[in-house]
Image 1 (cartoon, one colour):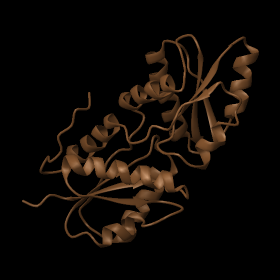
Image 2 (cartoon, helix red, strand yellow; image 1 turned 180 degrees about the horizontal axis):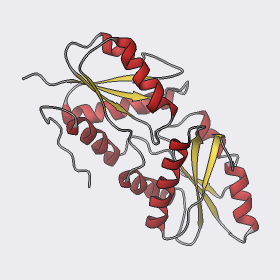
Image 3 (cartoon, helix red, strand yellow; image 1 turned 135 degrees about the horizontal axis):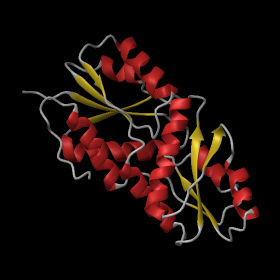
Image 4 (cartoon, helix red, strand yellow; image 1 turned 90 degrees about the vertical axis):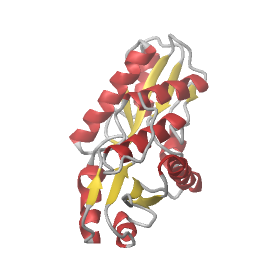
Amino acid sequence: MTGPAFVLVAHGTRSRVGVDTVAELAAAVADRIGPVRTAFVDVVGPSPAEVLRDVHGPAVLVPAFLASGYHVHTDVPRLVAESRRPGVTVTKALGPHPVLAKVLELRVRESGWRPGDAIVLAAAGSSDPRARHDVRRAAAMLSVRVRREVPVAYIATGSPTVPEVVERLRSEGERRVFVASYLLAPGLFHARLHQAGADGVAAPLGADPAIVDLIAERFSARSPVGVARSTVH
């Protein structure tokens, strides 16, 4: 039995490094489950509709988003419908998830954070309350791992902004403040974080093996042939 086509759907960015990160993720997932196509909902192509038109048979789409807002609830279903391709299954988004919290902690430690230092979780932001709720859940998961409260701040849409929260924490007596980047790949939003006045900025989550496993598990869970082998816990 031939399995479904696998499509990894990301936001899209003009950053070459950002696009390459998505390609790296797809290639690593493909090593576990077979060929993976990539699609983007904004900025660059191909779109999910374009990719699906080239697919024969069923397909499974994984939205590589860290929170479920407009792109997940509106753009992805709309583009699937535009493809007119039957037999398409869309999984839930990647985040929030304990695996992402684990990688967030790793990234912030790599940036120089030490226990006792303050952390701000920086997300792109959204006007969708469902996405903001997901970001707060992600911050709560990270808080458990680092054993202190991690406030949320936004880079582009929403308040408070990252510089505002960094400044507030310093005014409250925090000596060292670090930013945990709740972004999948480098780009304009991540570049802005270096202007927030923090002592350190963690790298984006990137193509970490644990995230590769999470994506493979998403595909496998919705695949009728169960092709993926995952080590997600």
